[in-house]
Length: 102
Image (cartoon, rainbow, N blue to C red; front, side):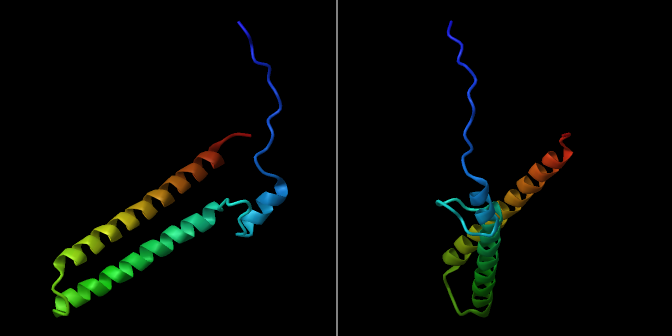
């Protein structure tokens, strides 16, 4: 039986690259989590605004396309659910990290 020796692991990125991502300047195609979360929140907000506009048009009788309004409402619900789950997972991960003993 061959036992694989333990070798030094090389970091996937350097400290300088980490500082660049903290400044919201992604390096080599990597995105900072904060920018990803902000994009999700902005997309959910945009979807809520579009749904509100479509609901208003439908209630005023300016559009007869109930199908499109319902699709937009479901897309908005999915975007809000995704953003909520993403935020919840981030908070849970943060709490777990803060609970670790060093």
